[in-house]
Image (cartoon, rainbow, N blue to C red):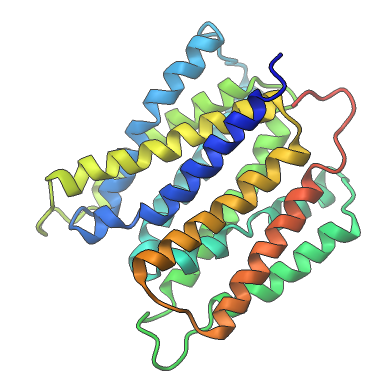
Length: 298
């Protein structure tokens, strides 16, 4: 086994997800509805899933437990993705992504309560920081250009969906191949396309040009490929090293690029919340890999 192969996969995921998060708003701002952006994302998942299926000889687990767990992970992930597009319509990426990047706090709590896993002082410190960071990130000064708090509600829903999804994936990995989980994630994403089309207001002008579906496809393929390389990063590497890269560094890249694109300096309280959120994610990511269950291969 190439001992450095995991690092290649992890770096691809980190870079691709970081850039994806910063650019995801561009097609919608150019006149391509967020709901159609979801459709494009679901279709781009077909590219990496073909690679994954080929790697396992198209042998997907179809027993009842695998179908249920795979579908649960898929619907939570795809549903969160659909809500994320809506969240980015009312809030900028530099606020939305720090908020949803705190989803590991929910995963840790669920694992503690349902799987009886223990969290170290470092993990609980991350949870505490996350709880403090959330209200700071949602602070809106009187002169803020961001109107309303809808983005907070939507970001919270994504936070819940992706936090629960991570727990389900962690639970499913004990009995399923990673490629099978990815297969169900792709299928469920495609199944939600009619719902996204139903939500689309086709009476409004839609940009069908290069800055519409084509730009969306170029951006969304980064997410799709990153999801697959993450699967293989965990296969060849240890969670202790892979988790901090993907859970913490990718949102940092998103924030830096997003702030550069917006050319804004957030309120000091919001900056404090962003720093605390990133610190919380680092602590929880490291906590996630401190104790690997014996006999379970990542």
